[in-house]
Image 1 (tube, rainbow, N blue to C red):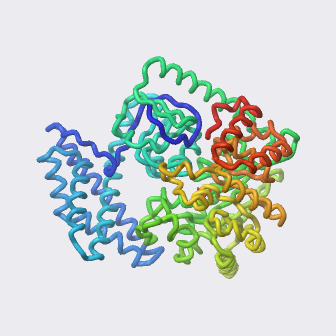
Image 2 (tube, protein in one colour):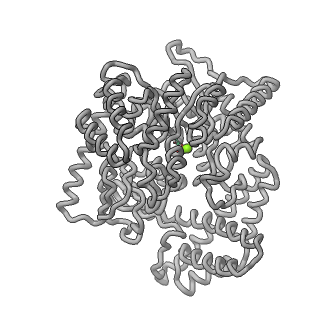
Length: 591
Ligand code: PEP
Ligand code: MG
């Protein structure tokens, strides 16, 4: 049994499907003679596709961002077309019988050694371009590799170093019942994507790719953070029983989708969904959310073959709004940088990417790009006339990530005003859109009272707020013991911010992952929060839990908890409370 961090609750038993990237653990077995020719064809095919990608990127970025930004893809094309590169790779495949992925790895290692010797900073920087080209090539190779997954039957448990949006796209409609990753923590992409699909996931299982191969039976226990490879028959049967109970519980809870979201004493609360795509919006409807509290638009950019222009964004936003519950959607502007990068905005490798040029900071430096998104959102918010008089009016809100200072939010408002004026001058219709800030930086929490004067609403991004408050990287399993929503420091800050918003009568919600955790939900309810936004899969659980607890009860629990001095004490106390309030939810309660 291997221990990791349980990041999405539930239990799954299935067939392992390993995604091995070039940089993780290339396939090192020597090819048989008969495999050499097909491997060369596979490499050539991946090279052709990479070249086509780069050409499209070059054209689109040059048009939309400018020729200077586009030029990077020409440089990448030159690297790809270097005859020495292909000759070396082909030689390694033919003479050493290496797989194309392993040959790429070896070639990259050689380049790295060469580059390490140079003192020229410009040349050193070029290594990252070479690396990018290799990653792109490798991506196409693993896409072809995925075909081997087709032969596997039954539900798959994906095992990867980290789960990237491109993996999720390639997996498409495959029946994925669990996820295990070597890196990442509670709020990394893999966790968020797995929760979005409502499947159990465990992250931070160091070295698991060395212990498991595609086709092995594997168990994922997302509550405890356990992974078991090749279980004995008794263990497998015990976990299959738990898996059935998990499915039954999910089905049972899903039946409450049409019930109103209320507390035990009948007070209405709002349960919204966090979504990354139209498919998630549909899932949110199926799970009984009453709207979308966070649409992470960067996924549109991360999963798009190139850059979506204004019309493409408009179409995507309209589609998401139409698919959202009650056509209510809070759209967040681009939150790139940190761990999410695209090749075209000039995001360089930084020593501290989460503290650096990310999110709204990056948007400000690309004003045209940012303005295009603002225009697309404003336009998408224009209510289409519908003949159905009973249909609720579309409500779109726009919010901005990682706001740190008052000046930033003023600047944002100025940009929105300019976009509105421009649309008016062009005679293009747009909707009335409340503007909100995401509270995810401690500085903004300290100054919340002055920020409230210039925003229409607040959404607390607790994933980031916690990592910044605790100075503990949200994706680093080594510090996950610090990155804890139930730590006393976090709870005190949240209580203060929620109190300030309520006093100022400004709508406030929380859209970090903790909103979907039973223990945190009760405490947030006690703090006076009434709007919660979470992965759609958690809506039924939280709706059920809410019906078991009154606001006064939650306040009393919070009062006790705010007197506790350590995270461990809070966790223990809350586990006990949840077991008493809603014993039926045991399978879904995670630490
Ligand atoms: C957050 O930080 O809490 C949040 C909801 O945004 P993201 O997870 O996309 O950073
Ligand atoms: Mg965030």
